[in-house]
Length: 254
Image 1 (cartoon, one colour):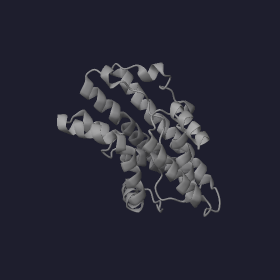
Image 2: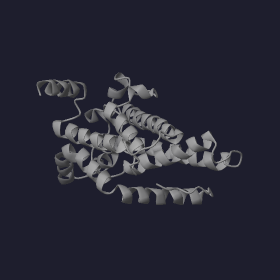
Image 3: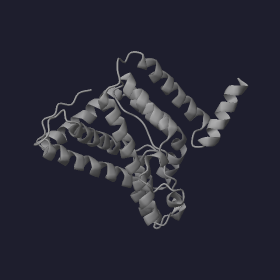
Image 4: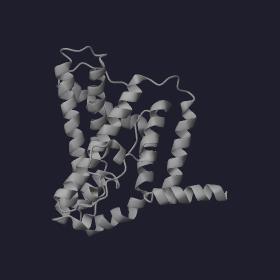
């Protein structure tokens, strides 16, 4: 038992963003997906591509936060070496292991995260506009990447087969970045949507968000776990809408 506590203390010292309750829920979720892996038959190339696209997309997302914060007067991310497209600078151990386990387990909704870019909101000038722009920056970048990928799907689809690896990459880049953008719009901190609401809210709403933020990750896990099928179906409906709007005939399933 003492050894387990030593491991926990060491983990917490390396990852101070995790409290005991957060760590507990993360470990429980990981154990759940590890158990489900035994029902999976193989690791496909699409899994590897989707994971790679996910890592790159999260990197752009975090860099956007840090860059915009720097433009609004906070150089915390810059001094920490986080305004870089090197994915290794942004990887969070749990946040990357979890999506791997999710992919292997066949779960219907991909969840993962990068190491949050450090931002000192007190340095932002003007404060509210700075907070809003920093919060929405990652979402905007994900939507831009998704749109570019959709265009590439349309253009390159005239020259390449649907099974071509580049078409697969473009498709996953479109889907994953659209998913990241939409998911981060959920108005619960620590997601960007919560920060956006916080940036233009009154005192009472701000106090409410301050109170629930420590439970935010638990709420997010609960939403994803309990509503995975609904979330996945809703997302695919949106993704399919834009595919049809672009005149791309790809059937999406989960």
